[in-house]
Length: 541
Image 1: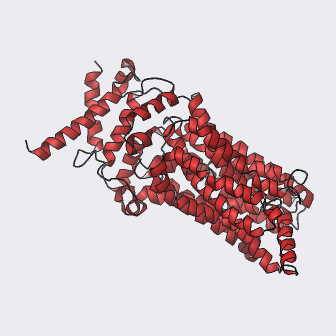
Image 2: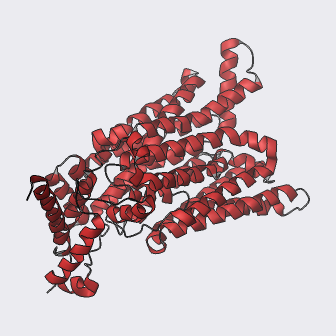
Image 3: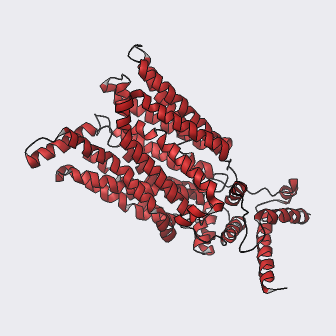
């Protein structure tokens, strides 16, 4: 036997023994192994450590994303008045209307632009500092701008607000990608979908909190807005104090750090039982399957044939998520309701009601995602948004001739929010985690995050001009984008619930016309599993 053949024989048998160990692990009983010749693994449960790690990371990071999306909506008249007054004190003349519009557009759009640059930092930071380490480091980009925005009125500088919005955007860009990645790697596969939606839930809670605080009688007034902007630093401080007590991603520790001892302890804390050999074996198997590809940068990810359809899918879903118009609703909610005929004093309460609906529907998605699956929620969500945009266009066009039509317009907006909350908002983060293995995941989130924030920036910048030029017909564009995204998901995106990362990779391998192999020159994963099935039938007796 040649040396190369001996190495291949050893690699194959090592992989076979790893898989065999999973099937005969104490996590499965003999009766369960005999049934249909397939092992039934112990289902993961929501332990206190896993629940607290989820809540702290989501509140400390994801909450800020949502809060800063909506925080400048309600106090915008008072902030623009501050801009004008400051300019008048400096130069002795009032600010021109066009310059004020430019400054305000910058105040709004610097946030998603910062998010784009934050997304570009994801891969190097999570590979260097780890998932938890990146979240802790990211708090710098929240606490510093919170102080800057809080003192902006005292400093008499609107430039501070614009710069701070960019910095806090970097925080949002990092957190929107790293939190789903961190929770996806902490979670057992049967809870991965539900826990993957928790970051989106806290984004919606952040939006609602900003809307409530923005009520005129609370902080959405001429004296309260600096404090309202500065409050974004509090969740960061809480995360900075509490998250160090929770474990780093075990998958990161095993595959990227090679520290199995720390990973074992972390898994034991997260799962609530001592025997975690089966899960560690699956991580080793994933590590072995990736050695032929190596660690992937963004450039190698873009050229990797085995990941082509996964990459196209996350780009389409993230573009569909943002270009479907959801942030146009949040950035310009007051204008939409005013055009729909809502009285000026009532707009703030309608906006809060819409935010509450968003939170409740995202909570519903947490509980139904593991039962219904990711694909169905995406299809239903984009379909609902498509229909709601068409109906909203019709309602806005005929509301002047029909007295009760403004209520239909508001109903359409609420239906749109419901549709987006159950699928397009939360699910792309979940499937981005699931579609890629450990070596490709940071680069994949970097690509997905960049597309997400560039699309967000585009909508925030373009929608006012669309609204001015097309009026109600601008929502037809959003409807078309929803329809195109729905068709793509129907044709291409498979169901990923209750699948391991390797199994999902194997599903895409057929579409990519490649085979997943274990190590360099080993047998295909499919053949390994077929031989394993035969071995399992023998060991069951």
